[in-house]
Picture 1 (tube, rainbow, N blue to C red):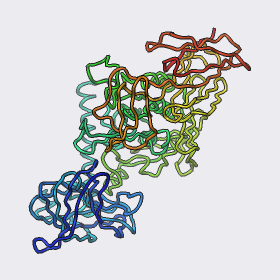
Picture 2: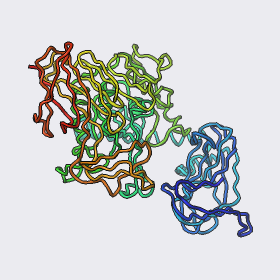
Picture 3: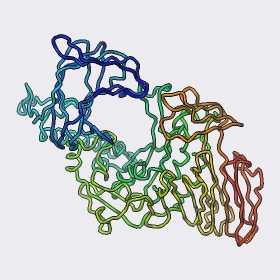
Picture 4: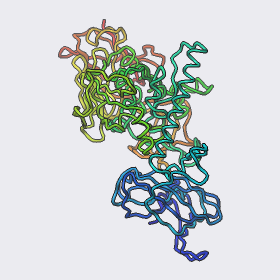
Length: 601
């Protein structure tokens, strides 16, 4: 089966060549991704744990790299094996590749892809696929003589299971010894007093990282993708999708299920990269669940990395120093996490992960780089961290006697309410998810709250419609550390879509414009696919949406509301109406601001 996708063009036929029946594929035009020209053999029955050897002959008009693997021949097209890179040359060569089945399927396919990377002609012949037991020792190898070769990734699966496990155990011990030797050197010989972190959990294992002072992680929601050359500023996209609609697939479970019991836990890189239109959700969401999980430190990546500190425009994917929504919502995040307005969840759910289990999961191909063993691989549900605290018990650490096993927990959406009652993540209305934070000193709404009424007791918030279909981040927090019902100074932050003047956001791979930003004419289309603004990041100043909402605060009067300027100074008074024991007021774009001060006299 030959597949040509999304603007790519290719011709193909079966020809007699060099005494063989040959599949010839000529790529006439590349698509927007390398896999947009590929072919496959469907209808295969694959058994988990079995290794298969694929043999074929191939060449190409120019040097090229193709990818070979097993995959489902039906939705959701799940990968069923390791992926092997094959280097083609102008000369016919016979290739023999070992693929290990990571799952079973009665309708799998052999995938040959990446053909769309170059506009050349490929030739293939004599395919076969057979079960394979593996070769314990290859020619010239001897354990006694110490001549066992390094198991390269390309030939790893050609070894039998026991040999693969021995190799992974060797690598695991080598990595552990390296980190522990460096740790002892820093602490004992150099006398370092600072906390020492190895690398992020996911790039090393939890048991190894637990031997250092802190276990660290990173996460990005919809990181930029570069289909061609890495970090090519002219060929990239992000998927314009709000994480608030994806509680179990988002960053929070991914991070939480790497927390090691008894060790400080940090997130030293986090972002929802621009130009994702929903990126304002990033830090209130992270801070809320970091507080609920009782983590120890969270970091935005990054503040700014260039010299134009006063650029007054969003400079790229990650810098937040010129991003008004991210900077303003850091105040809410600080109050939620550092001040501790959201309290840790009551229940602690733990699972145990031994070094032996880590080694086995890696050896069997159940995990991979950036996603080494975590609670997810132990069967913990991604819904659990949205409700309870979670942790992984490593090594010989005793499991806390008050902890609960995951098997005894009931969970799942579409509404995820924390066991302390302070946080609700609701997707009960499909693609209109919303996170509600309700504490005595901070309340917040993240997501699609437009047209709804949120009653927090002391405060009622009714968000209006927005450029993004009712999506916004709205929060009130006390500045004097008192409860909302007693505070004399409250900060109100309301943010939505943020973009640079003149920015043009397009559907990736086409000329369709989904957002065009001008001071007097902002046009935004609801679009949840691949977007890019390469070549059109725009200019200063950054423009922010003025979010409309009606707020009611329990008070008999004596309340003033002020719209603040970009420096936080009062610039305009917002009218208030006292009715039914509440002070009511409406914010909106007419105030040209994203934050307000509420003052009790």
